Length: 532
Image (cartoon, rainbow, N blue to C red):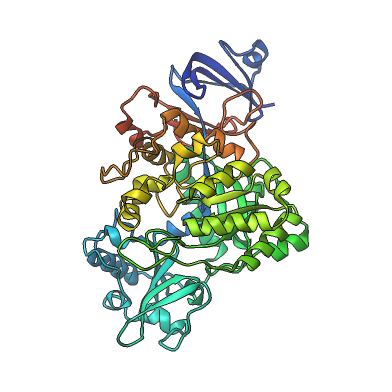
């Protein structure tokens, strides 16, 4: 028996904190919350006491929609995020530096560029990359992960030229005069790139960096929304070796798409169902993707983007996606369907309804991922069937300006509509979609409360929620979305002892300070995973 005693802790109670209490943890779970630890706990010769001296104890945050193994890869790659490379010249400098010490396979990989945040205010091209890397293949993924930029060498090695046809659900952007590829590959066109896979050793090295990030952010559980076979091998190996510092909730990638092999047939054939696993790694279900992203104007909308005739991309027709979702439901696998634009959310809801298995949909707490721009009809259906809106509200702070640019002010009042979700009784856990945006939940909480972007722009004044409501989105509601509301996202008897320790109460500071909150200690199953 392992006993840990957290003394003088102000314990989170949803919309306030308790007076100083003692939280006693046995074998990684909360055994009691009282004024003092039980006598038997204090008498245990191996017990350990942590005096929190009146600091604030929050449940460990839950990233309800992230890509931890993608973050692992990203942390090994060239950083071309707006914070690190704010111009095309800066992107070129970063690539040129990587060319001096390329990976063993010769491919320069990077991620994070967003043209709306570049000084140049234009999309980079292969010629920009060719100027600094003519002899090395270079692929830089846009921050949304739905668009890639490749240089001429990468296109050549992948057999892509002017004669290459657009794949279904994707597009090669071409020079209007010559028909030659510009180097921009949208959605399924990214599958044409023949990029070597990361080795298990590389992936494990990157995941160690990713785990350090989650600890820094106070995240103790993360849903992996793009789990493939390599990711499952990684999580299984680390779990077996007791080297996981974060709980992982894998969603298996369902269909062949975006360069990833679909696992739906294999999972069904092997009899894998939702809930398989243990407290550290537990399979959730199947992830389906219907459209792209807003910033790159590939999310599927019912009305065009501002100043454009573009309405985005849908990957599948209704019959194809309905059949796939039905197969998952029939074999005990929860569906999580990526639907960003209102047209994609429409299709997701049609697919669920046309399976003829709405009772199972409701029992399984089916999810619409991102659920960015739901219509009134969409909201009615979500509420009626108890479908979870896994909202990427973290985008409000990080890339909200680009949303306002391409959607306009009127539609911005419907983007990640948490006030409406709450008022209609729709469960909407928050997320960052890390590494699409920074995975710090406090930045998502700040954006949900203030509806301000990182530039200070107020995006709307309609969908603001309270601090308590925003905290719930990253704790109790996120736990509900994995059927773990009794054991995660709460500090209660029987729950996992996953905590973040803070010097200040988020209810007692100016809201502008929320985005800068940092835990001084993080605990997983009662054991520290960051310095305290």
